[in-house]
Length: 222
Image (cartoon, rainbow, N blue to C red; front, side, top):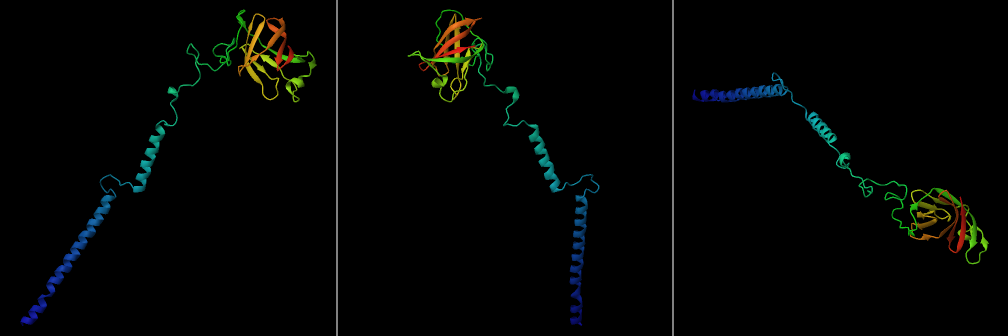
């Protein structure tokens, strides 16, 4: 009798464990379902934003802020300063002024003056018509003076005190000049002085003059 009683009572703990496991599993399933439903915002009015959407929102905000700020590589136009030279009165230069003023393109060229009268200037272009050897007095061709490739050069004087000499085919030269009475003093940009003698004047400008080029006297006329 005792043996049968012990064998029949051993089944109760196993049943209790199985029931407890089922209860725990059911509770876990209910908790998971509740968590999922609550994550979907059921009843709270709040939604959970997907991770990819959140990343896109942050990126868009960052781009918008960067676009709203000025580019550090571009200077603020309200504070940009020009590098143009200024004249003595503080105004910006960069353009030639009539009469060889401080804003003139030839202001750095020093023209030796004779002090015989008030400085003046003129506008005119002159063409060479004859060349003479200074030592012998014999007339020569312009190609003998300026080279076999010479075709046609001119001398141009401007009212801003500058001049251009295109007699040599390689590259035109420029310089500054000043008129004092009936004398013209002219200096190239390389500080070489032009030897010029006026034969005839007309209306404040030379009508005929001679310039010495390396031992040759070249005659010019307007």
